[in-house]
Image 1 (cartoon, rainbow, N blue to C red):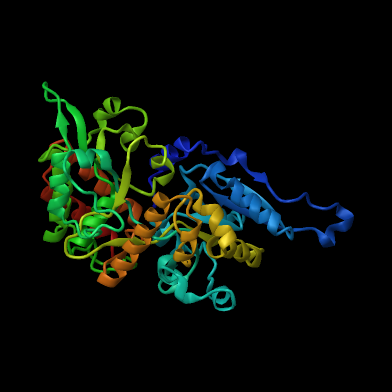
Image 2: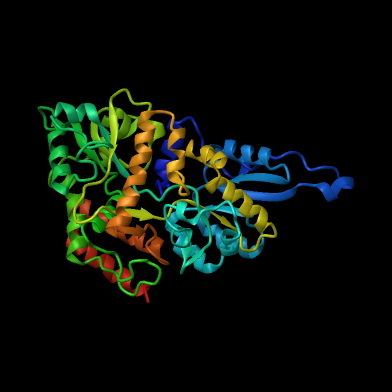
Length: 445
């Protein structure tokens, strides 16, 4: 998931009873290596790293139990600095054999050769049906048509998590899975819903908010630009852009739409509202009608109100990202075949998929196959929406790479700094995006 931001990951894990552990938690979860005199029969070592802490413990243990030929070392590492260390550790020969990778860093790291080319493994895997991928791995987790990883989860963008009780009180039907207006709500519909569900007390302070956007969610502005017919670069793959398009009218309009929830319509939560909303956050507080976020089903099922999930508003096309969190085999590893066996088990085998869907979302391979495993109708509907949204985006030609290219982190930092100035009243949307373009274009070429 960029899936979630690092903060939302930590929030998600804490609310589901999981904790993020540092590299000190690294532990071997496979059977003990045999004695030296039986070294010929010793399990092959296989080191696997990720930033999900204890959340992946059960999955690692399950793989080790089912594959005793490998001595599996589960090596969680802190999120902070995780991706920046990958090229250095690969070059130094100290990187793990398998590395989990965030979609936002694909185009920065893959061109540096950190991942092994998986073409031969994929072509030679008789158990795989290439037609069952939600997105071809050569695109979803690739670079210039070569697959360097297998996506663990479906390439879903953030969606709108709705307090249906608050919507009903305002006379609004929630267009969730199965509703006639599913995925057809337009921009104006969302604005009207957030205005209708916002309540204030006599002194003007908020009693109830229409929407929580996280000030300006990174998935939200991607979705709104794409659904409005805009693009971030002249290269829609984001692989080799030569010019940014931040000042195009469609891009400016999309950002203005999102900013207006707070600055014009006055219906969105602000950072200083957290104390009033409470420690459970917008999604569980019962005080926010709509929360724009990644897959937070594990949290929402704790809610004491009726809730649902809908897609972001429709404009010119139904948009969605591609690029899910993925497993990459270290290009310098001596255990690449073992690494591929793990990532194929995790990403494409039902027994592995079930382990990871417990903490993530729908698999990227054969996503429909996991539906019968849903624990409830609510979870099944979440999964069906995620799948349907991606299929609609492909049909509409509005599926785009989540990564903002080889300089994505730098551009994202520039963009976030300018967005902050908009909310501080120091920039208009037009001025901010012009500054983003002026700083981003010299990075491209």
